[in-house]
Each structure stands twice: as C-alpha cells, then as structure tokens.
Length: 199
Image (cartoon, rainbow, N blue to C red):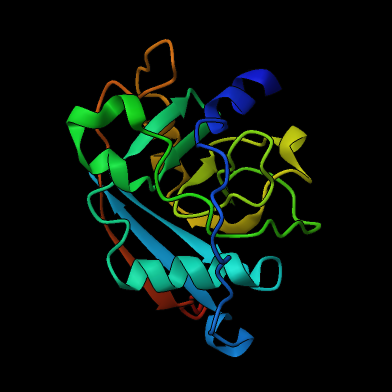
C-alpha cells in the first residue's frame, strides 16, 4: 500500500474554519495512565493514551469519550491491513455517506512528537493542507505506516485487540475507500491502565 493511498484516505475533511482551538483543562496527572476501551460491532480494542506526546489531543479525546461523542459513529474508511478511520459524527446517518470524513474537524492544533506510526498507532485525521485541523476523527494503523511520521498527531497506541483493528481494515471498500459494511462504535470507555498481571 502506497503513501498516496493513505493520504487520499485521510484527506477528506474541509478546510479549517475560524474558531478557537481546544486546550485541555485536564492536568498531566489526570490524563496519565489512562486507556480507551473501544467497543465496536466487530469486537473491542484498547489503546493507551499518550498525553506526553499530545496533551491537547488526549484531553480532547477523553473529554469527548466521556460525553458519548463517539457512540454510534462508524469506521467509515478502510485500507486493507493499512488504516481504519472513524469518529466522524456525520457517519451516524447512513443517508449521508457522501459527506463521511468531513465532520467533527478543525478543533485542534497539530502536536508532533518523536512517536512513530508503528502497528496500532492512533492518530488524528487532518484536512488536506491544513495541519491544524484535527478533531473528533482519528485513524488506527493496522500495520506500520512509518511514512506518516511527522505529519499527523499521534495520541495513542493499541495494547489489546489489534486483530480487531486488522479485521475492520479488511472489510471490502468501494473505490473511494468507504467501507461497504457499517462497523459501529458502540461505546468508548476511559479507564485507568490496569496493573500488569502477576505470574
């Protein structure tokens, strides 16, 4: 899979509108040691949040997850064993599929770190040519996408259920990358990272 295909997948949102960017009211202590449990119609995956890499993106995700902002949205775009993209509030409505990928954007300034797009990386979707256009939409790497490093804000990494992410990525897509099967996010729960198991 080429970088151009990935760029086409992620370049669906409109240009940034004039509005204030989100700044998290949460402290690093309040955001540290947290995980997001993402329940979908295809199974559950869990990712750790990385506030040290992207504090405003993590605070934004936590704040919105706690208000149910992701419930009922879908993973509307897929590249087989590459990337899944979701979180668009417009994707709740099957009749508006032509607008999928344009909702919930332009809320966050980009936060670039030394994190890399390895397998399971969770990053913010951007509008084409608009580095400060992050928002509700995010993508998850079903396999490494290192060519995206330095371009997108990484704010999480899957620690459990990568096989679910890969299964979603393998859903048949149309010529525009839209998934032909609706994979709905039924719930996102923010929890404390559980302690490691004792042998």
